[in-house]
Image (cartoon, rainbow over all chains, first blue to last red; front, side, top):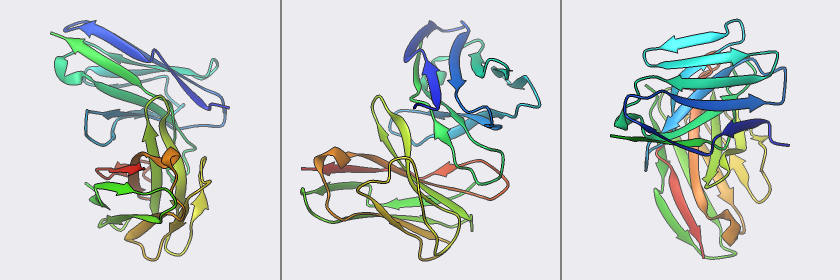
Length: 113
Length: 112
């Protein structure tokens, strides 16, 4: 059973548009949700994360919206730039400090100039 | 920022051979992880460790062993490599209580 699902698999937006990446999860006890991004030929790195005490987390142009009741979250990238082109992974774990993350399959984002 | 170093960066192995992938981290993190990345599957957890001398099975441990001889080193061992284990392998470390994973540069393994 896939614990973390992402959609769409790939997404193309024009420079300046808002990209919306979706994520859902199965286990209602998950309480930590990071997004990692990965540029071609590089390793994944933490982009932004949220805990369910909040339903929104902002960091510059990147915002996570979280809906605990529906077990869904989304990553919004406003004013998308070509440099944002990457694979984005949604992940989930328990906020226990043991970091055991379950990743989704990823969304490949292409921002066209 | 954590420094996680993987070796080798690229490896070609023969079916049935033994392969050892090594990972070293220099930030004294307690937790270390091995993931594999395949197109269409994302990152899947193979083995992990919460400290020297301990290893735990992840979500896809079959065909793999792990060894954590010290705080700094975590190895992934393929005793009898198969073509289905052709993949990119990432090692990661994290500090207990912080939740962030720091990934190494990855090892690209081809089993022929």
